Length: 464
Image (cartoon, rainbow, N blue to C red; front, top):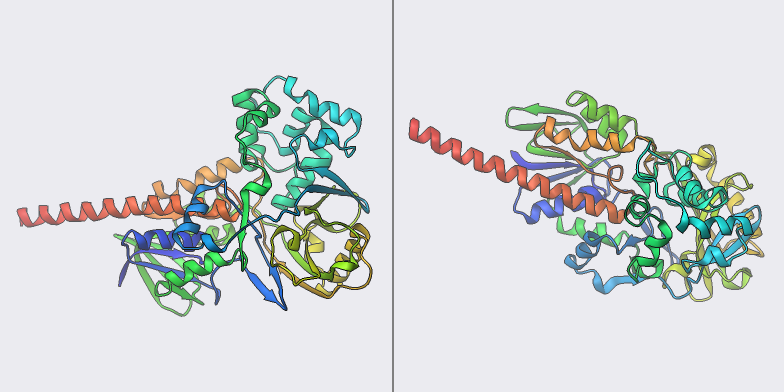
């Protein structure tokens, strides 16, 4: 049997791509080597608590994510951030420093020194950089807002959002809107002032009553007949009219078009015999290990108000927790009445070795640190740990060149496409946006090839 398109990978990227292509009328097959689809978007109910093993939110500023939510009939299950999110916290040593979520919060908080605040305030007066070599997040932040802001704000943010290092990540790749603001307005501060209202965290982040896995599970239900789990694809080779996928124990599968919706190191292996430059680009994208430690407490055990999304940690100030989310503050229904839950993140580029520490030891150390930061008395009511050997792809300097090589694979190998969190954003919402764009490209390719086949068939009839 010849499929129109075979999608390798059943995470949110593969599922969203398959959904759009099925709706366009194509014969689709989706292959996932694990027994379950959804990738790392796993939401688990545990004794009245909800643990997110991977992503925890979607961004409403990505229109494709909001549109897909509506198409799947999930708008009624959508949850906005709770009213308890009033501050942001940054950790240095054993102390959490509170900063208002207002755009001017860092100017009014004593977290930064007077000199540091003056550097932030004077950003609007600094001339814009119109050209030059690609900058890291750290270099960009230090140039625009001063070294103190770069070290004590942007580096923790890079570690928390991307499991990365601000001194390695490309600002053009991870914060393109900041670069655009400088180019467009000459200043980030001026761009923020002119930005439309409604871009605050409370207006843009959302989830669902039963967690972010609600969305991929809804897609899986609609794609039930197209999904085949427990299928590992070992090799991908070119045919005269498409591709052939060689699987471990499920035979060979033929298709007119193929989509790689897998991690970069897996894509590198599948591209090795087909596209050397694409394989090299994918292999060069690293993804460090990361652990999620989920702990629950009675509310009365914690003196801290937990009035935030959580906290981020300044590098080199002790402790293994890169950042934490106050899960039960972020969204309602995440913990039973009188209880709270905290998700702590360990590892990433900053602390690779700690991520894969023995689970029991890791859970114990995380609790001891939280007890200091949040003034917790007694032991956790429950503790769980999820360890990811590979987590978020690192958009380091030169990432745009790698993306260019990967997105141009379809030009060198017509009908072959790549989608995933290492192209245009690591978030779940960004993956949806990228997947829907990929599906559109595949649809155009298939429509074109079908038209070409019809024209060729008619020509052969007329000349036969």
